[in-house]
Image 1 (cartoon, rainbow, N blue to C red):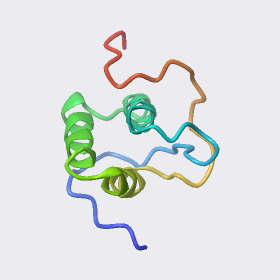
Image 2: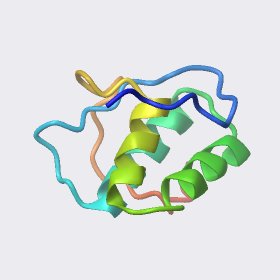
Image 3: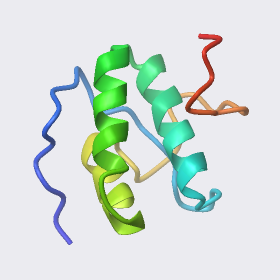
Image 4: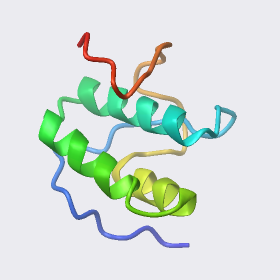
Length: 89
């Protein structure tokens, strides 16, 4: 399956490890949001990508995340406690 062209303009495509990780949708979105924050994305960009990811089924979520992130290796930063709604940062 070929990824779609991303609809949201983002400054970069951060690395995000998915293989071998928890496959829960909320966990994936939390990891993606954290990677995006660490890569310098704005809150509006993160929210727009999360909204796009949540606009369909689980397959849509995975395809959307793969459109905006490099999911073929390790995270740029390997951190625990990756909640999407973590407002501490």
